[in-house]
Structure formats: C-alpha cells, structure tokens
Image (tube, rainbow, N blue to C red):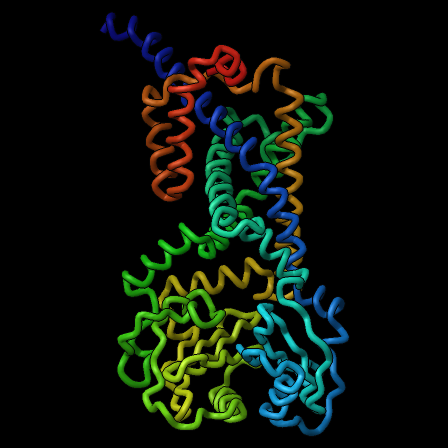
Amino acid sequence: MGNDKRNQPAREEKKQDKGGQFYKSVWRWHLYAGVLVAPLLVLLAITGSVYLFKAEIENVLYADYYEVQAQEERVAVSEQLSEVNQLYPEAIIKSYRPGETDERSSEVKIDASGESLTVFINPYTGESLGELNNDDRIMDKIEEIHGELMAGTLGDRVVELAASWAVILIVTGLFLWFPKKMNGAGGVLFPRLRQGSKIRRRDLHVVPAFWLSAGLLFLIMTGLPWSGFWGTNFQTLATNTGEGYPPSVWVGNAPASDVETQDIAEVPWAAETLDVPLSSVQGLVPLSLDKVVEIADAEGVHPSYSVFIPQEPEGVYTLSAFPPKAQDEATIHIDQYSGAVLADYRYDNYGVIGKVVAWGITLHKGSQFGLINQLISLFICLGIIFVAVSGVYLWWKRKPKKSMGAPKAPPLFKTKSFLVLMVVLGLLFPLAGLSMVVVWLLDKLVFQHIPAMKRWLNA
C-alpha cells in the first residue's frame, strides 16, 4: 500500500508527460498543415464563392446570347442545326441543349477548326445569336482554377492534397480548441475581445474555426468525389459494393461495353461509370434530333438536359440533365436508329452512396435550396478565408524571429496514440498519408543533418 502511494505521483507525472507530448505533436502538425494549406484554402474559398453564383453571373455576362423573346411556336430542332451547319460547314456538332425556359436560347456545341464553340440559336426564328469559345468562358475558368488550379492532373492532385490536409487541420484544430478546464464559454464558444491582444488574436482564430469546422468538413467531403485520385477510387468502391448503378436501369440486356458514359458525355457523378450501350440496328438513317427531343419530353426529363450526339455508327444519343436539385438528375441512352430507350438512369435508381453524393454536389454548388443554400455556402467560404488569414497572422505574431515556432515534439513512434491517429487519417486520405511519409523521411534524412534547418523547424 505504501509503495503504491509513493508511486502514485510518479504515475501522475508520467501520465501528464504523455499528455504533454501528445499535445505538442498535435500542435506541431496543426502548424505544418496550416502553413501548407492556408494559401490554397483561401484560393479555393474565393473561387468557390464566385462559382456559387455561376448562373446569376452568366445571365448578366451573356444576356445577349441567353435571352430571347418568347413566341407561340418554335422552329424545328433540325432547322436550328441547319443554321449552324450553314455558318460552320466543316464543324462537328457535339451536343444540343434546348432552353429550359421560354425566354432562353438553344445551345449547340461544336468542334470547329480545332476549337470548341457554343453557338446560341433563337429557337423561335432559327437564327444565330452569336458564339462563345468554350475555353474563354469566365465561369469555366473559375471552375478550372477551383478544381485543378488550371494545371490539369497535377493541379487536381495538389487540390486533393490540400483538401486532405485540411481534414487533418480540422481534426488537430478541434483537439487544440477543446478546453482542458471549463472556465466559462469565453475562448471556447465566443472570443474574448477585452483580455489583451494575445488572447484576442488567439480567440479570433480558434473560436470561428470551431464554428466553421463542420461546414468546412462538409465542403471538403462533398468536393472530394470530383477529385481524380480519391474520387475515382471512391467511385470504384461505390460501384463494386453494389451502390453504383443497378441492373434495373437497363430496359433490355445490360451491354457488354467497355466504354463508360463519362467518356462520351458530361453526366451526373452517379452515372459516370455507367456502361454505354450500342445501337442495335446499324446502316439505317439515324433518328432526327427533333424525335430525340420529343422522347426527352415524353420521358419527363428535366428541361436543363443536353443531348450528346453519337459520332460513331454504333453510338447512342445520350441525354444528360444537370438540374439544380439532385432528385431531378437523369441520364438516358437512346438507340440512334430506332429511338428505343436503352437505359434510363434517374435519382431513384441511385444506390445510397450515389444519392448522398448527388445531394452533396448540389449542396456544394449552392443550387439544391436556391438562394439560402448560396448564402450559407458563401458565409462558410468567407469564414474559411478569415480563419486561414487569422491563423497565419497568429502564427506570424507568435513565432520567434529565427525559427518556425513549432513546439519540439517527441519522436513520432514514441507517441503511439498520435501515430495511430495519423495512420488512420493517412489511410482515409492516401495522398495526405504519402505526403506524411515524405515529410517524415525529409526530417530524418535531410532536416536533422542541416543545423540551420533543424533550428528553424525545432526538429
């Protein structure tokens, strides 16, 4: 009994030491994640804020192309295409999009002289309203910056890496925010603004970050399905577990095709890996686009749909609807000769994962619930900018002149609980996990052997 009492302070001290080591490790990696992620988070938040209002911005920018005076009758779709063929005799017509309202022009996408163009047609007169080069559309540039930094696959991976590290930033930040002793809500639920500049700076970063953490995590997790690495593997997992498209979408037998719908058309996320059927009767005159539009109307497809025109004799017409609300999505394949509907894939056909992702995407884009959705998402984006900037400012004011200011943490393998946490996060987000290994190797093989670098990093 006596020995137990004498050993108790030692146990308490050891326990506190372990807790301190864990805290320092979390703080150190939170700082690393913040310095790495903050600039990209600001960029993604800015471009995301703008893209939330894509429809409204484009309606102003392209009013001369979009707006038409409604009349009693529309000219046939074939006549609209004839106008395009006369203006661009060498062009390849890729898709047709009827206006979703009576006051909206039709759009015809073409490839002409190595350029991708959209020709706008007045559906009541059949006359062209002008053209836009698809590579020059402002909101498409914003989307490209937001998704891949205008750097293709490399940019996509960088954005995904930043998003993955942002999750680590949230997890470590919540641990640092969690009060060790509850002495009121100040500094926890609301910032303390009258207790000196140091406390004010700390609270203006920590408290808003706590309130925004759920919103930021939501935006990250609803954006990752679009990413090239994490998103592709997640989509494969969804399909292989039976939560992808079910056999019921096929009107006849499922095709033995190795072409996916995303290879021929822009379609909703849940339909990207849908196999493309083949038109069964070849050599006959293809169905007119007028008839395809009639089929779309008869099938009750949301008026925001586009028709992707087959470029091969065995190809199919593909109807794809990207409506504001997830439950109105549709992907339909139609035999180009007989007009038979070969596959009809709607929201109701989606598996659980497909439905969750569909809702996540429309909420992420701010379209699911209209203006209120846009304003909430805008608030989160602006909050992210504030938290990122305030975090960098807090670090800059705190850090010593000759070092990064990170606490000296124990060796990674001596803090088992922290190691487990990082391994779990690394497995969930492989690019982040790979970067952790790279950072650890750099620390062991490079930073530890360069005195100036070692002092700067407090390694």
